Amino acid sequence: MLRLKCESNSGWASAALADLDTLLIDHVHCEKKAASTALSLINRYPEKTLLVDEMITHAQEELEHFALVLGYLKERGVALRRDSADPYVNQLLEHAHRDEPRRLLDALIVAALIEARSCERFQLLVDALPPGELRDLFDGLMPSEARHFTMFLTLAREYFPATEVEQRLEEYTLIEADIVRALPDEARMHG
Ligand SMILES: [Fe+2]
Ligand SMILES: [Fe+2]
Image (cartoon, rainbow, N blue to C red; front, side):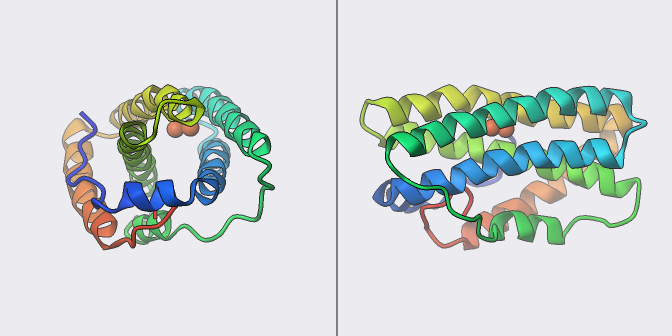
């Protein structure tokens, strides 16, 4: 259903579990960036009513996730530090078209794939973590990521022909799989 072409590398979950504080810091920044991306889409496409409506809800929800994960960090006594570059997202964006309307299609597909990969990785964490609050956190967030994946693809189909969306999604899932396979196993949500 998530359309990913590969699973995360087998060593990723143990690398993540070995440094949960670093993973959570990376994760909290991912939630913030998701909210920020939603706002930048509103900024770029104010005339697209459906997109604006969806992105208002999305920004609010991702900001709620940001606050939720930040709460876990506070409970663990971990101070938030500055975000570092996200090689996974940067590499995905390197393949995006710069010209409209293809720029919008790629932005929606990239956002959908980031959500799908988060969902897959939350499941790996749920499988690997012992019962407890952290496992409950990822278990609770997983359904939203799956829903966000579907929402971004639905938006893409609203503004582009279904065949064009399908073709570009197919291309981008292959690109995404190559990027994920080459990522080092680190305590980061995306590598
Ligand atoms: Fe989120
Ligand atoms: Fe999300």
